[in-house]
Amino acid sequence: MNTVPKLFVAIDQNDINTAKKLIQKLTPKLCGIKVGKELFTACGPEIIEWIQDKGFKVFLDLKYHDIPSTVEKACFVASQMGVSIVNLHALGGKDMMLAAKEGIDKSNNNPYIIAVTLLTSMDSNALKGIGFTSSMNDQILNLAKSASQANLDGIVCSARDIRNIRDFLPENFLYVTPGIRLYNKDKDDQKRVSTPLEAIKMGSDVIVIGRSITEAEHPEAVLNQIYDEIT
Image (cartoon, rainbow, N blue to C red):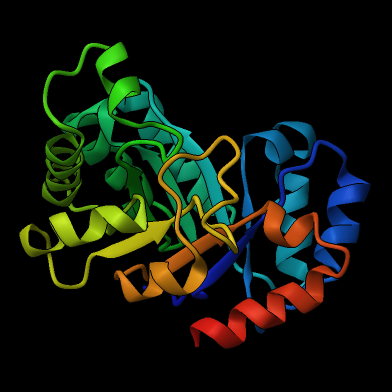
């Protein structure tokens, strides 16, 4: 299994030149790069190759959720690009996750494949709004267990979820945490947030930070500050 940084910077841009300028202010010794739907839709595999040429590990955050055969093929193609982490929605079900794992295993690469439990923008009211009757904690635990049973490597979850679920999951399970803000008051569209150090203390293996770094006046200085704090 490949090794991954403790910190990935989310580059949420729809312009390749803007994205490249941001990435060039960072250093692969301190972080990897998360490529999500916006950047990948705008730039495609070209940006993945460029980022890797600069020495960065890539977390391809496309959250696959489709019929099993489609997800299997998508995960195979994603893996062949040489990325370090691929993810999908655990809500797609165990059969879909098993198929995704098969796609990864057929490739020449060996990225981590992880499942999103519930988005960090969701709270209990949002959960009820889409018809779930179980509590948020129970729903996250059930989805995490399903990911483990499908032989996935870990999950994407809030740092605050980890303490409620880790005793039920494999010891080497990978916990990847978005919704990271430098200050807890900086919530914007995220509801279940934590600071970088809080996330690591609560058990996160990998944290994902976007705007706190990319919108800073000096992104490289903020990156260095966070890296020093969590290592």
